[in-house]
Amino acid sequence: MNKTEIATVGGGCFWCIEAVYQRIDGIKSVTPGYAGGKSKTTTYKEVCTGTTDHAEVAKIEFDINVITYEQILNVFWQAHDPTTLNRQGNDIGTQYRSVIYYHNEKQKEIAINSKKEANKSGYWDDKIVTEISEIYNYSDAEDYHNDYYQNNPNQPYCIFVIKPKLDKLIKKGVIK
Image (cartoon, rainbow, N blue to C red; front, side, top):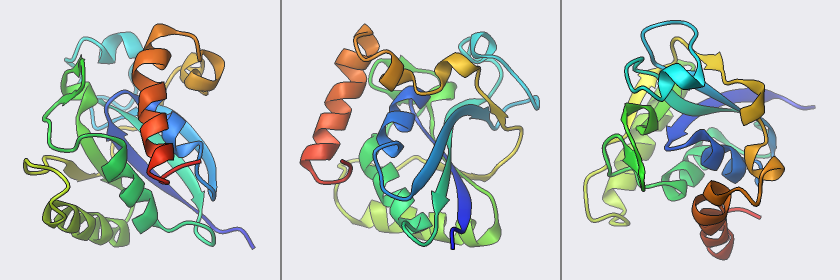
């Protein structure tokens, strides 16, 4: 019997996060979106100004019989640099912040513990700055963001940013 939950994370550009999670067993869907801003809805154009307070996020529906929330977060820590404030590579601004939006108290507790363990791991030289917050003001991104990497593999951002990230995670055995 399929039982699904939702996880929502931001770790830079949502195209990258979407491409990563689409390659993991137990993931039912990944939807790019915006969360944590001043208004319930927004647009890509507005978010790109950096003035809405929204983060680019991926809403991940997953089968809890195949993958756990803890495993979702383990991938999250490896899929981006959680030690850079409001930045991932050349993507700079609050919309690219590292953030875990929890949907219930159990997810909150797991996220806090996961962050503590990640900080203790010694994997990064600097301290993790990832925000952990209750989900609020979430809205799906415009349709053209869905399956962005799959639909645009030859776009320069996909070639120079997303593909190397995927290759690294495949080599490490994090994703397929």
